[in-house]
Every structure is written in C-alpha cells, then in structure tokens.
Image 1 (cartoon, rainbow, N blue to C red):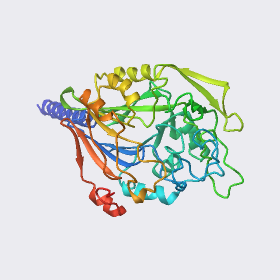
Image 2: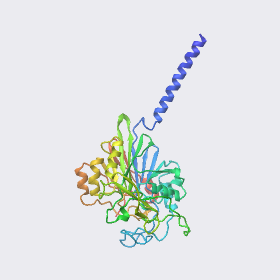
Image 3: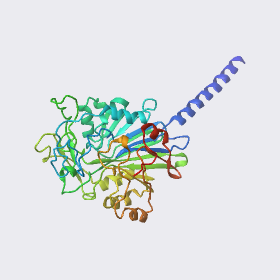
Image 4: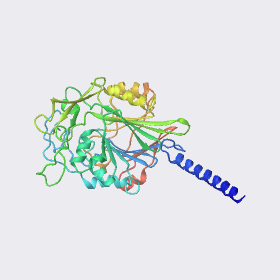
Length: 402
C-alpha cells in the first residue's frame, strides 16, 4: 500500500514537473511568443536607427563621428581630396571614431543596462558604418553586414567571430519571435558616377595608417570604405499571437538604374590607382529585384507593414509592387555632416511626385520632426510615441524649429 502511494506521488510530481518544463519552454521560445510583441523604432540621425523587439535591441548603421561641416554648399568635407564625381574618392588622412560622440549616443539609448544584441550594416561607406567597430567593442553586439564591414571591423581589432558577413538569402533568428532576412541590393547612382555606384567589396582587412598618430581608416569610397558590394536590405518579421505577423524593411541605399540586372561585384584592394577595378571581378549575384522578391517569399509575406528607405520615386516605383508596404518612414535624407547634438539640420521634404506615388499605392507616410523620434509598430499600425526625456537629456527639442 505504501509503495503504491509512493508510485502515485512520484507520477503526479513527474507530471507536474514535465508540465512546468513544457510551459516554460513554450513561454521562452522565441518562435512562439505568448503575447503580442510590437516593434519599437528610434531614428537616431541620418540613416542610424534603433529597433527594439521585446528585449532584442538592434542598432542599424553607425555613423556618429562627423568629419567637419563642408564650406558653403559643397557636398564633400575638407577631409576629402575632392577627387571623383562627388569629391569623396580619397582622403587627406585617416579618421578614428569619435569615442565621445559614440558614447553619447549609446548612453542615450541606455546600452549598459539594456543590452544591444545586434548591429546591422546597411552598407560600408563612411556615412553609414565607420563607427561599427567601436559600437561592437563597447556593446559586444554581433555585426551583420557586407564582407567589407567585417573586414573594416577586423582591421580595428574586432574578432572575426563577432561579425557575420552576408551576401543575401540568409536568415537569422533574433529572438522574441523575430526573424531577419537579408537582401543584396545596389548602391545609389548609375553609370555616370561609377565610383559611387559600382558594387565594390574589400577582399581583406585594410591596413591602419602607420603614419597616423591615432588609429583609424581612410573614409574614401575608393579607399578603405567602398560600399560593400552594393548594399543590404533588412526584412524583419515578428510572429504574433494567432498566426499574425508584424514586418518591416530597412534599406539605406538603392538604385533604379540596374534594379533588374545581376550585381557584378568588383574586388577592392584599397590601393591607388585602381582599388575597385573591372580587371578584378568578384562574385556575381542575382538582381536586386530578384533578391528582394526572394526575401519576401522566404518570409512568407505578401506585403510588409513598414517600409524604411530614402525617398526616390524611380526606385520606389519598382520596389512598391514587390514589398506592397502599408506605412513609410524616410531615412538618409537629412544631409551628411550635421552634428548629432544640433538636431535635424533641415525639415523633411519629399521630392516631386513622391506623395502622389505613395497615395496611389495606399501607403501612409510619417514624417520625422527631430533626432531621436520614436514610433511603435503594432497590429493596429504605426504610432508616434514621445521620447521627451531622452531628447531633453541630450538638449534636443521635441520638434526641431526652423
């Protein structure tokens, strides 16, 4: 009789324990969240964003160091030698990351008490990811981006294992029901400015300038910072209860010129006079159009909820039929050089025909009003939320006055 009771107690206890383990496993599984998980987005400046999905925090692009405002209406900073179609092919000296500027941004987003898990690099030019190595060093975040970005990080002392080089078609489980899908795209421009547009990829870590008194890479787009084989679009899908999803895409560049043509990467050595030479072809990838459609299909989507990219009507006219976005937020429209702590340098102004294009496709547009603006994407849409405390701490107004 005692043995029977003992077996009964053990059986009940085992059932309770197994039930508890099963319940805990379900609640902690990133693929099956027990409750709705919205996507929170913070526009830091230029093409820099913070994306938060539960406790998964992702920085996209890392351009916080500024090399100085150019004189007058010049596109290029005095840092550059003014060679090339935009004057940014070569530099006068290497530029190390401005640790104070980077630390200011990271402190504002409370990185010490709320971990940054990933740092995504849209592409590898100087106005996008020169601070990625320092961000990775300070936060421990894993970098995901073009091989060029990984080589840049390795040159600055980041372990190769901390950067995942991607060329399109990859997917990653980010936790909290979120999956990241990678699309290979082209850089902006066309055949009239090939130094900017050509898909150039470093083939090895660049060498730090030994003549410099401080470590740093050369920012020229034909030196240590080519575009990284074009660029990468990021598609993030987040599972919600009842089989629903939230989704967003982010891209910080793109071109309508050869949107439907294969991407023929050029190998870049970072050495003058032909660092990204047609005599040194690299791998070839499918067209941006095919890559984008493949990512949407891989994610099992027929449309995306939120679309973040620059306002280029020609490019958007080709992408909208593939992405079928519901909401739009602009990025990389506010110049290149304005100091972060001065806030937005100009108000957002869409190019001609942009508003009509979005309206024709039923896409709702949101316009930013200040650096560190925040939005939340949930199942009811995209909503602006206050980020007053952070802006106040940085000395920024809630909305920039012009």
